[in-house]
Image (cartoon, rainbow, N blue to C red; front, side, top):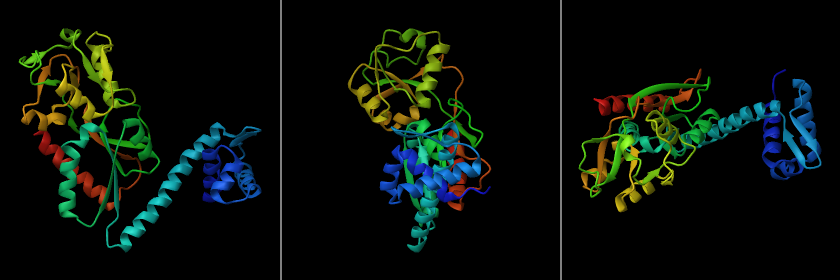
Length: 303
């Protein structure tokens, strides 16, 4: 049986609203029509995709699988509409990127500057969020490319990765901090300091947890936790709290003499920052062009 895309979108509507009545109101389709659409889908596949009761409708495991593909289909249709509109305005199309804080400074901005200088007639959308979120957006076709740390989260067979450069680590602290005069320090010597560290949900946090575990010390309890890089830097500059991050993220503050970076001697193996895209799928011309520029910029940064 060839799946009817309309049936998938009907299932997605019911899943989002939790009931046939809510989905019918949102899509302006009658409940009987929606119910018939789902019944046709189930009959054609030979499986139940929704469990119905007086509380509404809940996805079965089969339904969850179909909804993943329905979200990708919806993103594809939305993207077609956007690209057509941009073409009508004389633009080449849209480049949708997902980034994390370590790539938001230096690497991606430099690559975008080169791309937009060489290809001015392009619209760019950049989403900065936690790794899990932007990877999900990539898999559901909301993004063309993701630039983030590699080798920390789960591997997905539908996602290709390419290392670009190694993400180095340093102890980051204010210039007047008592430890700022050190040339290097071990994590084991920092058990008494106050920390500001990433909260959960990011590859950044997971890698730091691995780093502390490798050093044989527990995750700091005397810590402020936030996923805002701006907040982390502001707290470090205004207190004796310290953090761990790539010196690339504090280049401006270091040049201004506000922040120092001290080498860490026991951080373990470095993880690469890299590029991610959907496997077995050709990149759009704009995305392929940006990936090429990104590789060139990364090569220059690692030299």
